Image 1 (spheres, rainbow, N blue to C red):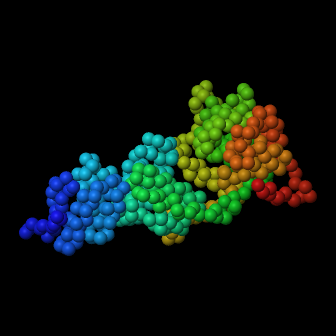
Image 2 (image 1 turned 90 degrees about the vertical axis):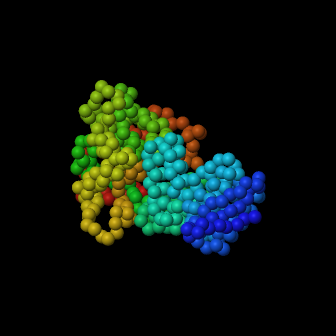
Image 3 (image 1 turned 120 degrees about the vertical axis):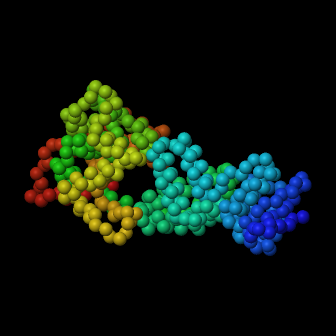
Length: 419
């Protein structure tokens, strides 16, 4: 029969209960209330005689914390000890903080470094949001708390960043559910946010705007911009990492694998880009970078992200009169405050290529293949684009390196082609 006992010199009660095989257990409950200690002893003996699986053990620790006044840490410790006595093994750590640490350790061996870094950032923010609650058992986290985390991030970050963070939290709890540490993935029921108007604000460059940027760009940045555009609007991180083994001037084509989608791309080199690349300092080492300064900038970042390069491109936009200089005065919002999204960025070259290519009559399938977009409507499994077709498509694009045509009627053509 379950009972309680207290040493004359201690303020804490110990619980005493009997296992199904007759073994007697006595351990400190860290409780000063005798009634609560007796209630705990009765619960432990009942569970011990009924048998306890791992999932029930997770739920039991949460119940004991709520009903007996035990700290969450001590409740897990007592239930873990009981589970070990019954099953002959220790109960894996199940606090949110402990599980996240174990989960990250596994993921670092399974995913790319950049992905592991993103996982680490999101879990760190999630634990910081929970505060002391990060020491709670995984089973006690509800969808309401995950939704509150999502909304807290939405007040500071873009919709896209918030949704990525939510998806990572879903993965964390999904893996915990597979390991039977929780009965259900509470994060799975939290909906992602609807796309905001921020992305709609992004637009292509006009011909005149792009020429203004090229006019103020130093040689390497000029080559980066032309490569980004003529290679199908490729992303800044991919272009900055190009080595000379990606550039085959003899055959007039570029071969690379995109980092985001892992898609193999073969893009013919358009004549204006060919002239630009041929004029760059080259190396006999095929692994030498085409854009050494840009690659060095990426290497200076612990995560290898393009933040510093994006800032440099924005400075070019400011110099070209296409963006306002950012103020660095304190506004009381902190570093985590939401940053306004401008209309133009290096990624706008992707919009520009797509818009201009379609405007000159290049087929949607060809544009999709060159840009590297995946689509349910047009699949790579059913569409093959040959090099000759790509080359013809590129030859029809305007030559940004040639002098601009004189504006008609003395007025600059300010029309913008929307994608």
